[in-house]
Length: 529
Image (cartoon, rainbow, N blue to C red; front, side):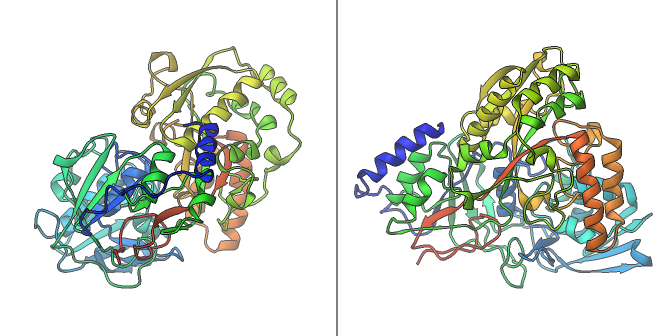
């Protein structure tokens, strides 16, 4: 649904949209929570992609060694604790005694070792850890150790990261599969079990409380502390039409809408029986990701040609309207809220906007008129509207754009293809990542520029990679901030992606639910009252 359709729907609501019709869910058991995710669950393996629907599904079904609290401090989850020796080159971890997988088997050190090995093949932090790893082995059922050639100061932050990619612990038999082979079966150790036989792709995913779950202790904060299933049954009901989701929430047919479409936010905030609040920290950053493997965006001069005409305000207003409380512009490679955000090189985006200068830069770049195959997911409203603005921008400065309308599932599949655009590949797509994933060079998926091992788009920028590697060995925030300025200057030369702005989303739930946990929107730690 495009923005004009949303506005029409919102106008209908304000004019007397019928809210009092009988709720289909009034006879439903209080043991079921009905949750509307922002996107359909297309893949079950949290290491298969960085889609947030898959990530959130992962937090329901799996636990990691550590969770992250709201102050971004790692807290033990499956781990009981750790010991660091030999000047940071030997780490010994001990698991809690008691947690089991959904098949009843205990979580063992061998499971953790295999899971870390699989995770290191995909994650940006994990790849750096693997380069410094001499040995990883289980010492007994509860203890394992990592021996390093060089210290890795980001160890706990890496193991506790909540997203892109979380280091979940799988049973060893699954963790031994290559990271490139998505899991087809869900056997986790988390508070909910996935009910495969009730999954309806494109419509619904179902979970049931795991009776044998043994939560971590401590305060509930972001992904740290106890992860509690407050309901016997959890239903994820995919509703790509925002009007349908808003109506279902109002009528009690669903309990919780993960991300409220901006046009419905002021309406729902004034409706009885509905709570609207911001749960996420860090917001969401929008980025245009070019494919660096093929023309035209294998040429950095072509990538830079967009900059004189790129207006982040155009992108943000297209999805969030004119209320600047809901979005930020002047965003570089680190989001607003990161201690590493700066104005270094930012004049490329904040100086006078000049479409003609962009056209001239494109002509001088060597662009030969190659088609830009733009992936356009039409069933995720923010992605769709941002893609429309990006397509218009590219066309206005002289690119020949071929738009490829598709659903979200198709985009996730096609973005993995490395063939040329005219042979089933792609040239560009809009990407959305939570600010938490982009706070520093170590975890930033789209800042990594190590070629074939990089995130989809596969940039290769040796200087940027060298600066990132230097960050891991730079002690203290002041020195890291100085280095981050150098990173951002180099970023605007290499342009692994184009920053489009940062926005803030609210969540909405029925007021008969207890207040959800803060930090990420996860249907955990809530009950009906």
